[in-house]
Length: 96
Image (cartoon, rainbow, N blue to C red):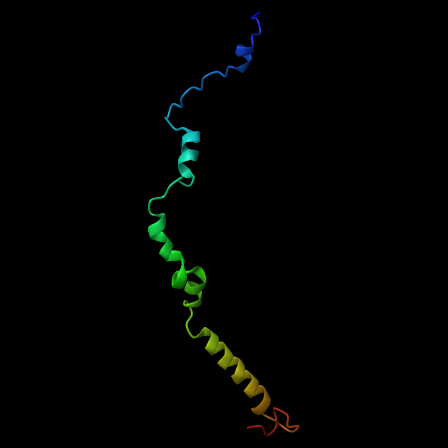
């Protein structure tokens, strides 16, 4: 048998290159966020101030808040003041 030297235990057999040339570790390294993005400073204006996510969402439906309040007020008015009272009439007799 072979003698067990400390250098022999720590050695890793070399990896064979893929037939296709695809290296998963290289792909994973390239797919992560780059360490330095030269366009980062130029792109920050898109996500701050009036272009923030909340402001873009708020501006997507202009007038929705006012319309909702007006519709709720109309429903309240209709329930309180526009009730149609039949005073005991049945729907089938003398309604028309």
